[in-house]
Length: 129
Image (cartoon, one colour):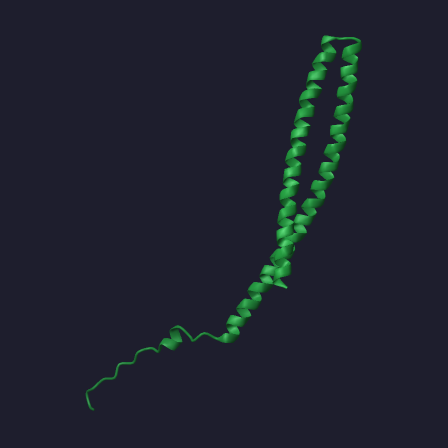
């Protein structure tokens, strides 16, 4: 056996250790905990946004009612005493009214989307438990 050199090769186990079932279990738990934390945070943010959106909708409804009232009053003024000055302001109010109505529709659409996201998150949390 003299003169024969023995070559040492590193073991595969030192490069790629065998999977540890406890490590995989801890990974699953940490992933689940992270998912729950993210879901909880998103739910909180969406509820906060939802509250602010509802406040904005209420404010927009009040604004819309005020604009409608002013438009009716301007229309009455125009019937009683037509004037170019009043007509000019009536057109401006009409344009503002259209923009407010458009914004209200957009806000309601956004509110529906937020409600859907909130519902989906709630369902996800219930399935996770």
